[in-house]
Image (cartoon, rainbow over all chains, first blue to last red; front, side, top):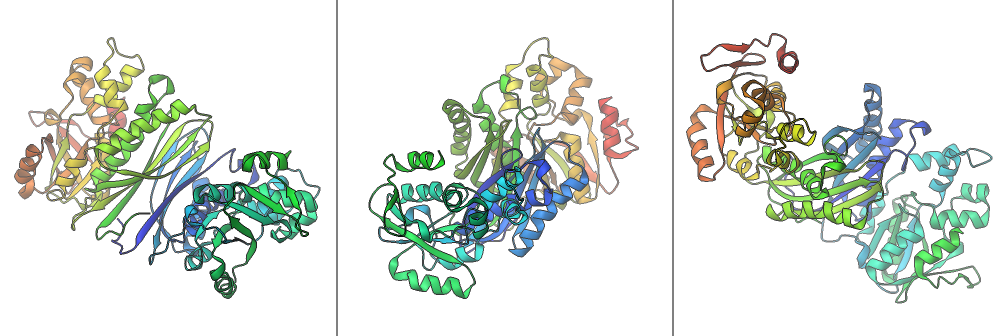
Length: 293
Length: 293
């Protein structure tokens, strides 16, 4: 039973599934619990909501008591940190392990961040650094010469940008969290706001370790296309940009301006000299295919 | 984004999983969609809450567009009937199909029904009839001489007792919905309220078709132990019983008094002549095992 609220609410739901979002052999069930909650808090952060409660439905083959505790510990540590209460749950039998979390957040004041609020001319900001989760996945798959425990941790224990989301409400016109990868999630935001975008390649905050491990070109790809970084992508009106940067800096939240929204279609990426890296003639999906290929 | 509310809220989550709650070959995905929402509305009904919104997370192998629509149609029809809004969702890949629904309900006024509120001397009421879902399961499994489409429908498309839950708030001291079976769910209520109970076997509203198909003794077992009827079990103070019965009757909600709570431990069941049908010496679980055996 939740108390009445004079604020509006957001509710979000997201699942992590064995074989899709994690492999049992990669590790600790604490991490699975953490991630199941973190991806939902990240969604709430992207709406500028303060997380308040969550429920968790576990589908699992027979789990040992110790395994259930491990899932719970991972969730509880993160929940405590953001003062979000577990208010219900459910366990059912299933062949594969999955956790479906639904989380609710409070929207104090009038502002809410949606994907659809962006305006032409808005500056595009991204939080933190990109590509780390992708490097982690490569590392977990044994595809790197040298394993990167830091990147693996990044992949398995994403940090939701809750504080940044809350402070961004006063400045940003739209936001989305990066679960599918920068280009794909930018595509969602552009579709919802009916806009195009121009990105500056050399401004994209590629994780330095990704740069070292993969080299410039592959690192940029990892930053543009690799998913699961759970950073925030924000559209900020130019007139609010300075105030937004100051507020972020005061809260030790790293944000980087990577481009600008325009009234066109699709995404253009320019290098330091202003040359188009690619002309995404077929729109985002086509572009992504070519970058991947 | 949900509006502010001056009322308290309940949130509940429950999943239906292929191979556990339904078999793909048994039928229509509409029914799966219906059931996924219905079991959650039933949970809210047992708390006396008015359902307002739900989110649905689908985990599925590649689904055809038509299959997704079918799931949606089953959910939408029920959602419209109870005026509950789908406010979010998520789809992930998985080896088996499962739907996890989280639903929120509003608690107008001060009352809320919990499992833990029952008092010694309260009368036990159950809604509708029992055993039908179990008969449906037998029918679907081909275990009956003659298939019962009505019982199959009962198993696949349970009707949440939302109206009864709402009206019961003014009268009942505790409630639970019957998902695991009368004796097991009564056990949950007794454990939460630290009480025992005495049931009168001949008052238990066994579904007449179950009686005909299985005969007296097996039918009583189906009513006591068969799950998924999604009726409500309510504890009502004796002083409120007449008013509760009148209110239920006015709303065309069938309720039957089946026994009474006492300060003891466990459940005793008596026949029409007052003889103990079983002496559940080892408590509920032991008793259930013996009834099953």
